[in-house]
Image (cartoon, rainbow, N blue to C red; front, top):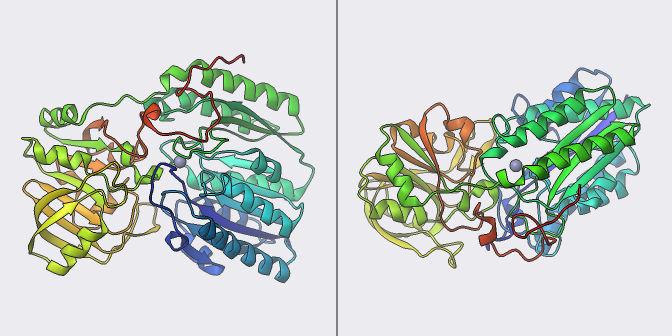
Length: 488
Ligand SMILES: [Zn+2]
């Protein structure tokens, strides 16, 4: 009876967010709790579990799932504590069971204050415990694929969609690769082509953009006889580490030459179209103009303070502009601001209070905005995202200033879908402007109700205006920070 061990570690780090991601910010699940919580969800682990359930002889050995909302660099002690929890659990599982293969569900774009490749470090520690048995890892397409990770994983399986809607399918693909390795007779040849390229913008949307064409080439490779896995990992542009870049990955069974040829072809395609992969942003004033001339809902994408990309979430840049503008349609703005929630809770529902909103985490970028607001509603902060997973924003307050409702949370959340608002009495469809802190991931949730979308150009630690960010570690030259000459 083959035993397959699995673990999960997910966080996306934004190096320019000054607020660190601490150990206690990782939501942990252990053992059977992971199976129970993930069953029936649209996640990698659920897809993985469903494929393996087809093989009755296989026993799953769940260990630890640790995941945090995106955020700043992970301090050294916190990272060590986190990896220790995972490794101790894996050691205990290996002591209790004869493990035949390992699946790791990773995000792949973590960074520590003193560790540029936390996933690579985890993999090294896992290998020390499990040895050379088959090991498959699924990763986000924003993962930073390091040489160390590639050395230690037999087959890497990246997402194929942006915005990400194929988490479940990625888990299924990873499980099928793992089964092939477990059944034997497969020799994965892993080839990557490294591109000095950082990408943003709408052409990344895989359903409609140029990047989608590259992904479809990858899917053809996977569908071919020797294809095991293929993808284009674009890295998270805000994780400032030496190996941040775009990687084309092709894994074929026992056919290195073909894998190399495929990877080079896709890399050339990406490089040829690099000028398309820049974000087109418009000013907040222009964005308000769009909303004014638009009777329906206009979604403002605050990619610069995208908590989904690792920003601090305490930007009040758009809020300031809305307060100062003549626009009087209903607006909904989320913000992370612990002291303001504290104040709202102390005053109670129905109270009118004077609050300073914004700039509590990233004060160098955002100065507090003084507002007089009415406290509409208070919540304990527990809710469920669209994918069925739990969200926890600490305590939450909904406050109102004239036409503007502000959802204030104590702890960072994904302000991507509608549920984060709807669960707190704010139905996005009832507003003229909704601010999401997400560059593109919000689209599947808003396409059906939004009549316009504005990518707003404001300051922030995850600005799509990449040359505006203070990069220190990424290997240079890299496009679009530098003029790069490349022979492919
Ligand atoms: Zn991603």
